[in-house]
Image (cartoon, rainbow, N blue to C red; front, side):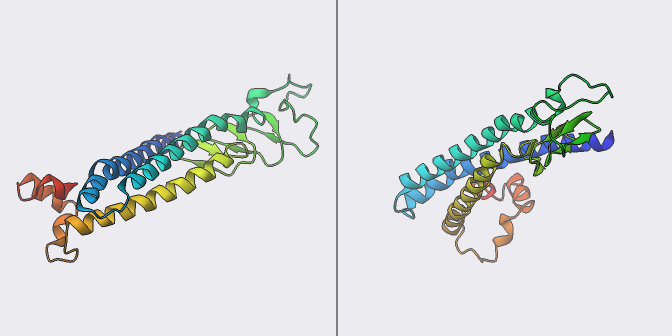
Length: 206
């Protein structure tokens, strides 16, 4: 019981973390970093960079919700949600897979599952082509949503790399020289303390 509660909390924390970091990176780059770099002339085509940023975040969100939408298909054909009537020995078979000779019986779902399907204790279903349970999407990655999960990871990597490059240019511009003796003031929690005592402005915190 405690383990299941801990895993469910990880599910919720993973989703909050994903959207929190995504929103922080996007809005920081769009509202803080790009305007400053554009004003200083550090970017040759700031409009193209902003368009690329919008396209990447759109692809991230589109593939994220596609993973959620298609995750139901992983279980619709391989779980106890789609059972045939119980047989004479009390067991049940998964609809569409009752004729499989190599089908295994899942004690949790009380149904036969096709080869390659595995039971997820968090989703409480047998997932066809089960790869892993992703806490950032709070669902299992399987045969039906893997095609959306891989582009999601690719665009997350692309977006992260773009934000890192933009923030590096921003920090190099705002906090020159980067290796000054006062570099310590840009690290938490020192920055928060300095801001609270009136010894640092909001740009340092940002």
